[in-house]
Image 1 (cartoon, rainbow, N blue to C red):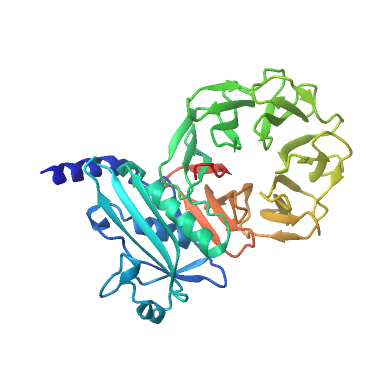
Image 2 (tube, rainbow, N blue to C red):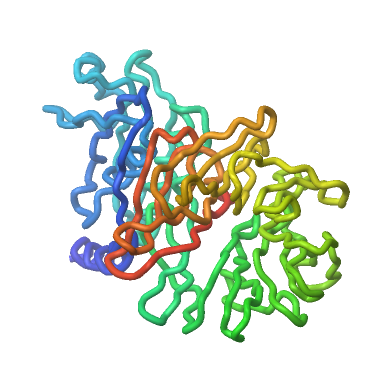
Amino acid sequence: MRFKKWCLMLLLAIATPLHAALTIEITGGAGNQIPLAIVPFAAESMLPQSMTAIVGSDLARSGLFRLVDPASPQPPHDPAEVRYAEWTGKGAEGLVIGSISARPDGKLDVRFRLMDVVKQAQLAGFSYTITPAQLRSTAHKIADVIYEKLTGDVGVFSTQIAYVVKNGKRFELQVADADGYGAQTVLASQEPILSPVWSPDGTRLAYVSFEQKKPIVYVQNLVSGGRKQLVSVKGSASAPAWSPDGRKLAIALTRDGNSQLYMVNADGGNLQRWSANSIIDTEPDFSPDGKWIIFTSDRGGSAQIYRMPAVGGAAQRLTFDGSYNVSPHFSPDGKSFVFIQRQSGKFHVAVQDLATSQVQLLTDTPQDESPSFAPNGKMIIYATEINRRGVLAAVSSDGRVKQRLSVQAGDVREPAWGPLLKNQ
């Protein structure tokens, strides 16, 4: 009787987050994919959702893994049960095994191990005690561990994304897991919402709202739900960008006429003008070390991307290919930046190496905008248009792996990839 009651509680606890706000279509893959078998964890069939399916979906979306059929006459759940010859014969180089067991207090014990099939050795092994509601987030953590062990890069499956959905005249700022599940509405408005950007600690979002009939920057606390207008000045405020320590924001203000860049403390104090000229400066972004700011300016006669020291100084033009380059964002390592480049009347995602100035176009869709790096620098999420409807898409930083994320209805715009969190 107790087991039946626990199963009912489990079903109720994890039933709500199963609906996907965004569906993901993968259109590409890396040249050398790692063959990996993920054996369904022991006893996970009692759950209404497969944890190993979530792990496999995460890894497949990266384009770096080729999932090997895990069917086995004697599926292993412990290292002593692994018959390596069987998995070598299937072509697997990595093998994931594990188990799930229910505790009397209603929680779950989850154990998993990552095995190196070639070396016949364990690469990683972790156990978690979780509530049923933490099933998806734990699956993302497991995928992060596997990704890091097999690629050497940090996994970002446990991160979140923010974006704006427009349905009719209603705009919603939403936050969801990186795979599109668990979408939560942060703000709903009858007026446009633009430019969401995450604070470095992931607890706040800065964004632009037109609810006062002009663009105003707000900072919203995702923990308490409270928010405040960042600055109150005449003219408009737009294009917020957090400093790496989260203490300041760079914004664009029209307080004194044309759009210029300003610095302001995160609590709205100590507003200081950062650029001063007769042209348009906008879309600032801090370098990861906080020493530089890149921004869009028409000071050369067309929209181009420039770089200046964060303490002020001479501006250096960075883009020369074409007459329209906008929306720059530094890569997490600060060695490159992503931006939107117009070519033959179409707008594509491009990335430029800061050392060599070499530019690589990453997309072939015509209406791309708002690119944002994943915190490991391996993927870039952006907005594009398919059949006259806004959708989100993602592309690897080398352009080889592409994903498309869409909702059943509405236009999706203005994506921003959240940071890695310390407890991840």
